[in-house]
Image (cartoon, rainbow, N blue to C red; front, side, top):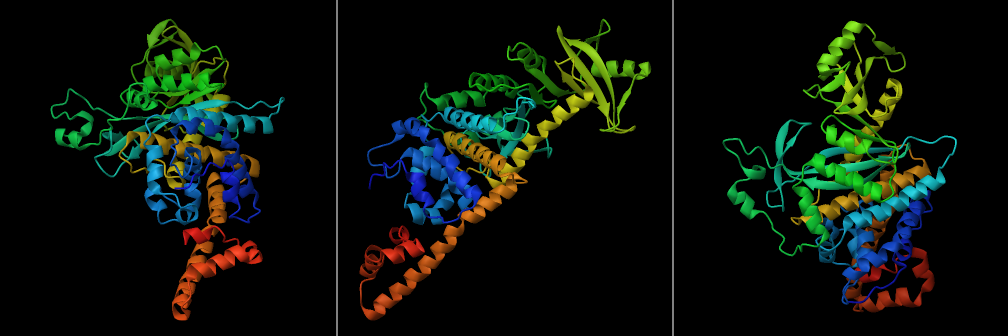
Length: 485
């Protein structure tokens, strides 16, 4: 195999395209700015590697834009004929237990966030920055994936096999960026009579893939330990990592599944001036209100009799406010409903000066992570990786969030209406190579038939066309297809 040690890989790849669209130029500009990752990937390269690990990483980042669903589909794609790089080299990269994908992700994300901030900084109009947390189902079609478990889908109210993905996102007031994630399983209730750990029989657990190359000090071992943690516990670790990487935020937004005293206490104890804002369940949690320990329903009952209900004309929402304490922490409770017969919902925040209208608008930002789940799954194949290796699942998910963040950055500068429109527009431009490739293969087939009829060597004709006729080469821009054909 030839050695490709060029640091101009992206610029060479860009020569295949003649489009002057701004989105294409911006996309390649952002990818070219990631050359600082070469030092991180360098230690994973071998002497007989055709493409550097960094180059393969960039190729994987480009897969969705070339209609390459996954590595298995890469062999039938235009990229394979263009780059002549085997798919096994991609599998080896994803299955590598030593690559710290979280470190790579944060280095790229911090760089993108800094660029976005510098381009849109307004001292007089500071946006509200929010960390957003939520989980989503990542179902799988088989039962032999490493660490596979039976998970319960709260949205569909069904059980299926796969992973639970816990994601941490950041909203800077305009755009959403996914920062970090962890994959989890659901062990199930051990008290049940027909209890099966992770919803699998003994035979199914034995048939699951097991990676024996994972060392104790590897980043993969850390990911493995996260799998067995509770999501509420792992959530705090994700926030600590974000703060350690320089992420600053004004509010942490969560739904009722994650609202807990431990999380409220953790955010309250931070020294970066952040607050907690989340939904609360109508459960048995006690709050200190008017000197008494009362539940959500009991406080609401008292407020109803006080006849101090407020009404927001813009939002058309009825609401109550109450200053309470949650195990010694001063918080503010909001009770709201959208109609007379509607159900009462609760919001809790550590910012006791926050009004209901502003709290409602800030919390509405949490919907951006739901949009991320929808677009990442539909456009970028989030959770669609079919590799049995747990490392490959981590790597594929990391690539997906980086692709989304890259698109989000391009969208910020090119002012597209939606990220989906940007993806389809970029894909339409890049996929022009597929048409050129098909035309070229037809030409090759015709030349092959002619060479047999006229008894001349096809390779000699091609060499003459591409080596001796520079004008022809420049005109059709197909020089690099000769080897692929």
